[in-house]
Amino acid sequence: MEQINIRKAELKDLDVLFEFKQALVESERPFDPTLKPGPLYYYNIPELIEAADARVVVAETASKVIGCGYARIVDSKPYLKHQQHANLGFMYVMPEHRGKGVNKLIINALKQWSQQQGITEIRLEVYAVNTAALKAYEKVGFTPHMLTMRLGLEDEKN
Image (tube, rainbow, N blue to C red):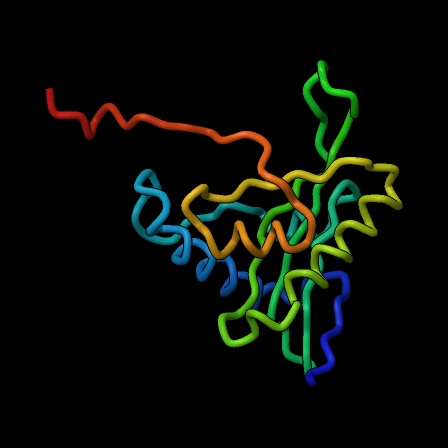
């Protein structure tokens, strides 16, 4: 079995992280008809790597980066029990390494970092029809909480 190491991302990882970012966008396009064509930039990766309120981690095996994810501390709605929570994003594992527990290792590292910051709640967004991602997140303890619904008025034929 491959030894998988999780470590804090560094600016030297930017080339592979930019590749992962575009691969993530392309994997999500079938789930989201509202995405613009062409390259998209969901995240400012260098800013996330250097931010005090965020942690970007990478998974690597044999000195090759094979996955990533981040946790960022954000303010919660004022009516919630917790004042802040960690929001996970940029969760990506190379297709040939999926099913090996890499996602779980990444989430565990982000969970540990969040707890060290005094955070008691972690949230993430996932497309409701992305059953593979839903199963992966449920496998590590996430439960569905809220579903965002949309109606594209430009698509309606009157």
